[in-house]
Image (cartoon, rainbow, N blue to C red; front, side):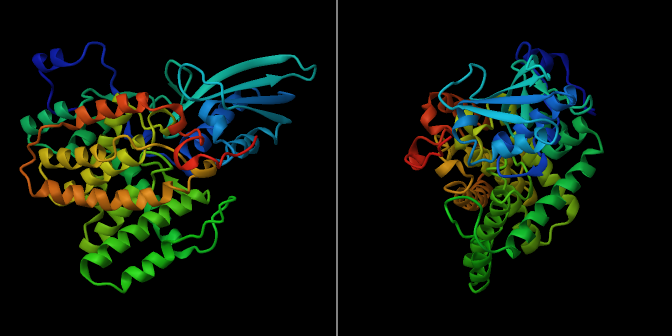
Length: 426
């Protein structure tokens, strides 16, 4: 664990009853799209419920709030049915106007015996990034996964730790996680790169009623025809589109921090690896740094579009990618924090308004643009000494409050903003 022990004064400075952060393995989840909260989360909920009731005669699943409002477009019903129906007949009820108090993404699973008597009923919440909660704690983790391992949970205090120890953010991750984190991040990086490569090769229409054409291939070809900065920017767009289109097609991706924002971090890192020749070890350290910043937001605010809007997904992804880029270019802890702060700050207030409930419009384009913004944030920060007025922690707190102030119309219900008039019928 931490090789430099925190002294008593530092411990006393922590917020009372502060919860430790969990492993960044819970942020970087490998799975299939199109949505971490609407596809991966419900699928996991069904698997857990099925494990407890493998002999049930029938299942019923009730979807509430955002989970019901955009569940069709996010393939929520298919994720549930694929798990439960091979065992027993399953019905799904949609209640998009009913919001349970704990979180907008709620579902209730009921198991019945052969006499139609209810065996068990369980209410769970898909809280973002594929994670599940029972209303009190995150569930579905193994003993090792569920450990709270990060004793410092604000970026200002972690930055202070870096300054006192002379270590980097990725070294804080290693001290807390242990050496085996690098094996996990190596697998994460492999999946990210393969998603880019597949996305650059696949063509045709994305699934769903929008008849949206994949664009990564054409962007990649066109970018190669430009020189210098235009080529660089075009390639970043192409890489982000490639991963996001793979996600929209149900391909294997990594939540970074969510499925809907999964194209940003891979695009930036893949581009820098290809153009600058950074070693694999340095790429993994950049991933560790990015994961730490994403984890801070997950701990102190939210990465759920249904809870805080797209600022918690694409905005956080941009912050993570900016931090990773700054790490790769030798940024100081203060410069890295500044780059991440800008990445999130300039997405404040971004609504989550997927057209037809699909993770396509405006999600895919936002991934491409956020990847470019992340590189700009790194560049801007590199011109400074890292000293600035608004801290990353402050922006996280503002993002959380802004998200709570947003009407539900703009938080993944498919009823407001760009999504207005394009709702799925249930």
